[in-house]
Figure 1 (spheres, rainbow, N blue to C red):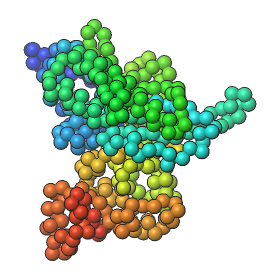
Figure 2 (figure 1 turned 45 degrees about the horizontal axis):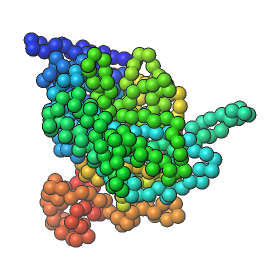
Figure 3 (figure 1 turned 135 degrees about the vertical axis):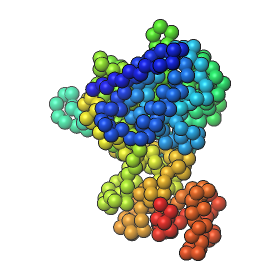
Figure 4 (figure 1 turned 90 degrees about the vertical axis):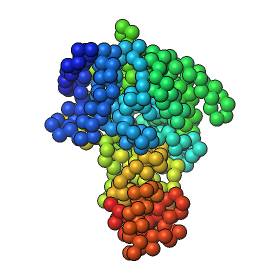
Length: 429
């Protein structure tokens, strides 16, 4: 289903350009305010050079990017494809749509039967840089059929999604702050040499990220990928245009989409009616682990891991967009997450409301319900404390309650975090 809306500019120095809006198939007449805000911000930035704009496609997952907004401190959006003349002059205002982890690479690696014993603990935490906020490396299962007997079986795969992390963000920021043309940014992305920490050099962002993927996959016993897909990238358009795609482009094999960390990936079929698809279907809602059963909580924290001493991970515990099944084509393949390691960026967690932090922090009762053999929660969770980043707002609210609580207790503020008794944290909502 494709909903189109045309925007015609009244300014005599501007010309109209096509806007394709897939969000209407998701939200119908109840589009969230954040999505409307994001559309206005993107179109407002592009209108400055409307004669250079060919088209804008808002994908099903288009919205304000909570992560990039938290990192930059300014409005950032994600989930779109913008086609521009190659001479379009970038500026800081274009950061609203051109931002984030440029050149993300998702690869599928078939696993042999010998790999089935691979444990998550084999993955080196050093490879999970916190600034690669959407990094994924895990084992996934897909229903299959034995080619010889026709008997049903479960095929296993390693799927890795990684990027150049802060290096990619710095390069993108450089394009917009320097005011280069889109053509020059395109050439820079293809030729910018990167040097890894161990000294290895790579010709561009793509080769750097592919090497990261291969290193992570090797820890699961995986060797050669059966499919690789690049998202958040430039694509050469027609007649001197360039496409910036914050999503994925379909090919003859279809397109891989990360539904959500706890669900896994799906592959959509190739289509003649559309070229661009969302690379993920993450919503602005988070899982409430306090409302789950003991079995469900144990399952989540045993299968999903990250290199941080906290249960709060706004990437790993993000819910998918609810209506995506009705809005997008039926997937031809489903990869269910068996166990995975995920990025965890405290900058995103610091921007969360206290209510969301409480939802992702199990209570003391939950800890008592769960034997240590099943899952050992972080120390502050076992003490029934809720960890919040100490910012001006939270500290001010806390000081205002100094007559009711001993807020200057060093056990509460450790210099970076507020480690609050749950009762006290609930008063900050």
